[in-house]
Length: 232
Image (cartoon, rainbow, N blue to C red; front, side, top):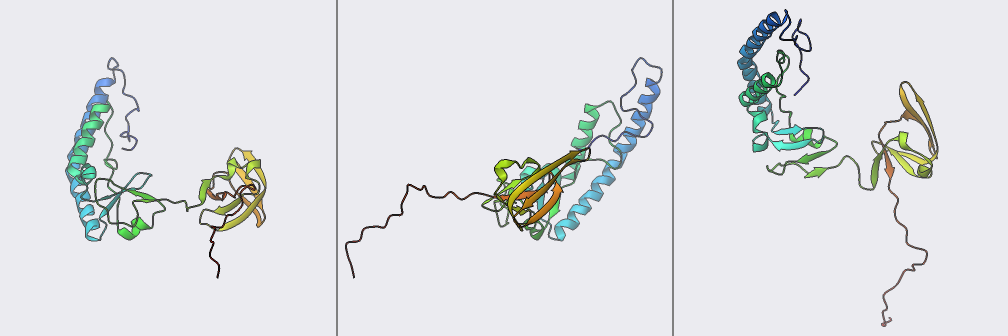
């Protein structure tokens, strides 16, 4: 649910019930709330049409949150998202019970489900599938970071990163780190990264990939060859 949008002319906090202006404030609040609730049926009908058109266009997957949790549109876990009447009824009740302010205006409301086609889901850098519904996509859990790579930020680079191989977020090699210079000012942290391939200037929070080290065998270990008494 988004941040409450207060109706024009209403204060962020209601006046004291003992104040002279409270009665007028409450009357105006109630008027605006009734007007808003009267608009809900039209909002429900509009959103149901939008969902129907999306489903007809093949957008049968619902993607939720920053983790990109993927559901089939008929999944019971998202029933209250897909059932717009239930979503709006619950939203209005919660808003009116939680605050003395006017409830959200015509541009607010319960969040709409984000519907996608299979191709759109597969184009996401990462996603996880719902455990309750059977989702026909390529992965149960898709990671944005390739195997053998680790997400990092140049702002945290120090001496232990010298000699490490780094890559851009898209996997383009940047060489091995030779020197790191950080500059901090009012706008944030900037990093100059000198590598064996060149010099890169970037925001300290830019996404990079660092190539994981591959464990090398101990110098005390020697390769062994299975004994085979037979000779040819």
